[in-house]
Amino acid sequence: MPNALMHVQYPHPWQVGTAHARIIQDELAAEVERADRYGPVRYVGGVDIGFEDAGTTTRAALVVLQFPELVPVERVVARRPTDFPYVPGLLSFREIPALLTAFDAVRILPDVILCDGQGIAHPRRFGLACHLGVLLDRPSIGVAKQRLIGDFAMPPQQRGAWTPLVDKGETIGAALRSRVGTRPLFISIGHRISLASAVELVMACTLRYRLPETTRQAHRLASHTPTTP
Image (cartoon, rainbow, N blue to C red; front, side):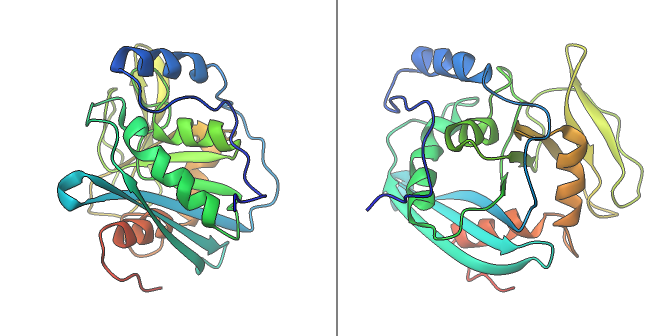
């Protein structure tokens, strides 16, 4: 039975050609809200993707944590056939169908979703975090381990320090020093949140590790490793 709490905005086909996929991205990018529009944050979600069966099965992991305590309250794994090829810049078409299946099964919808991927730090300003956030109409943040596009100055060796990630004169994200002595994370707006709030929330979700607990635990779940609090 579909999750009565979840409603997908702007439904569109997923098994499309790459040119059609880019058109969909361009059209939905206009729906991204880059300012704060969310209420009290009681639950934060982390999502990540793994693949099984030599890549033919997409394994979506969703972890929901109580905020600000960061206590896990729900974990969901969903599997779907992989129906879209690996194309840089179009990963959301490969990954989101399985993520929607995971959200359809979750009992507690997170107030903000942290995605292992890009938000507007994307050639068409519509990475996975934007795509998922717009479809679910939920605040979302891109938390990427690597830069896709843009230039930045290395942030100082201070926890929470960040520098702008800039592409063609536009600030599209932040290079964030989440932990001293590690490589920066690349934070960008997904939907319904400002960059400053996105950085603040990511740091509030980050404890001893480079990754925030949301995406760290989702990554372990997506990678078949048992997740521990």
